[in-house]
Length: 167
Ligand SMILES: Cc1cc2nc3c(=O)[nH]c(=O)nc-3n(C[C@H](O)[C@H](O)[C@H](O)COP(=O)(O)O)c2cc1C
Image (tube, rainbow, N blue to C red; front, side, top):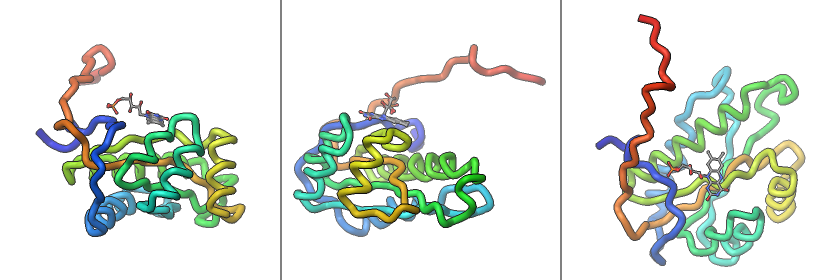
């Protein structure tokens, strides 16, 4: 089964560190995403130390699992990569980047979960304040990841009624 069909949201992790090379491949996958005008508006915080993971756990109502994750990757939107006010597509760019990260996590045999961050004002403020991010850098998503207890189980989401064929 290919990675897309294996990927699931995983929220519980073994207490096992993740090699830096694996984390690098995961971030590389994020940077491989398509982006409007090829602006590549992303940057990343890659977090493996316990104190920072614990802090991330308090940044959104659902990020508590960060404290027990092997690593946390926060994707950041760099608003200087284009005219942000008119760049209607920057969020799509970041979503594609986040999905690539989740797929590479599954490909590596790990589990991960996307924690919604942007555009919730409180979540964004908490992340920006803690990491002292400049005005033009906005956190987009928090991805928690780690070694999971179980194999990712395939769940079939295919619904033929949502497909409208013109053929
Ligand atoms: C934009 C976005 C925000 C999400 N935020 C959260 C979250 O805050 N907490 C969480 O546990 N899961 C979060 N998820 C994961 C979804 O709950 C999950 O993808 C959905 O239930 C489908 O399950 P699956 O990923 O295993 O297919 C988020 C997913 C997306 C795309």
